[in-house]
Length: 482
Image (cartoon, rainbow, N blue to C red; front, side, top):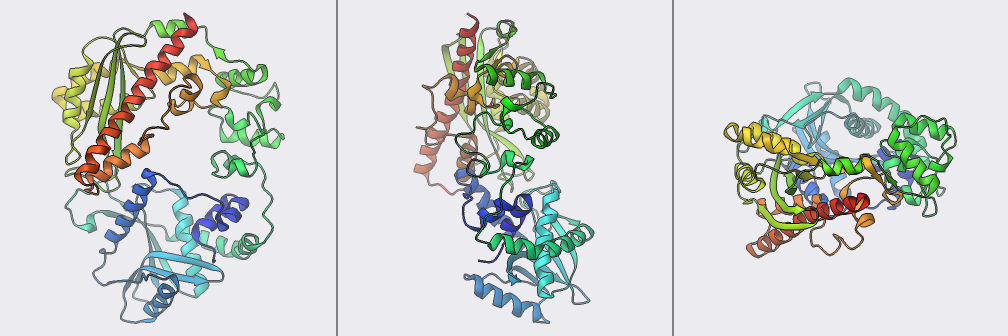
């Protein structure tokens, strides 16, 4: 198999990662949310094929046939634009989004991106394609990135969906760099011997970290320190430090990082002296609020821009004391339309005018503030709701640490530690990404009526589990100071 863009870019990040990617040792991202992403990316690329009226689609069912057809098209003087063309040269293979022939018979290479913003890694993507075309002897004199325009609305002409960014100069510099590296990378990736891994900052979020540098026997890695900067990681690595217990006493750490280090060294948990006061500042009745949302690349409804985050459902548990649930309120949007107004109105109805509104993280605060901006007549009431919000994750982060958190504080990470009897494993929908994707599939009319009814029940169960989890975590914290 030739070296494709994913293998090449992964190699640039880490030679070991590139080598393992070539051998299928890096698992493909799975789950409903990744299914949705792949579906949306395919849709965006299909739409981009209509940008030029004289575009020829070079894609064939077999890669070898696609490569032969692409060669024919680039040599055909009557062909002015090609999409989905596959090429191979020097052990590398690519599929380019769009090639447009210019007046001097050179080519303009376009890369279609589903995002709305420029990112440095996009230059690497374009440069890799341009490098392979250069190996073929194909003259590419201009390169552009095509992003989605925030001005686009459903029903507009496809030409208004994309905005173009000329990246010819940046890509040109990177192409030469890639050409200089290409022989060495090809040799390393195809070698039977895996490049020897070494610890570096990019290891922190690497998908193969546990089977590469780290292993099941390594406990309390430096990556378990919360909010550890890239600079601090590099400095610790230069000192030969890979676990928290080896960090020198004089190494500069934040207060929370020092607390985590002390917990590891003493094998104890941390409870702040301020926890009791923080909990007493949360006023009865308690409303535990959780939102779910969906962010689509292409808008689902009229008057919505690409990548707009839309609230889709909420769950509320009302208690008069910690753990004593009086009422449960829940709502799921009609998947055929934008229901943000209705969500705002129901929040005002269910959340009353007094008592603390407990959320986990800052998303609900931001989302309600946006609703206040959307609906001026509801603004005052919504802003008052925002003023009552207490972020329970912040309370946990500042006041409690368990060594089994491993530097994390998200509800999915700490719940199994604090409340082992609670789990999302038995739910059909068990995480926010899957919840968003399931709603999107309904809105895209990919589910029949029976599947829609079943999905909505599962979405409500999932959201209710999140609010119940907050009730239980609050109850646990209260038990620490009782």
